Image (tube, rainbow, N blue to C red):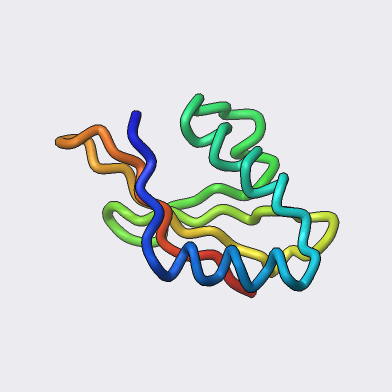
Length: 86
């Protein structure tokens, strides 16, 4: 599966890494999405926002408002990471 990082995702990732947010948690979330780890996704409140966009709480212990939006394109088999913010 190919992972596509949108420009807004890259900008926000740089911003949060400068603020010393635990970026390894983002990597864990992406890995769980790719592997479809149901236990991890339930723990991090993965849910649908619209027809093809989903939301995940990245680090619930550190900051429950830290969110990642993503969508999976079945036609191209591509995971598109849209944005994470708080």
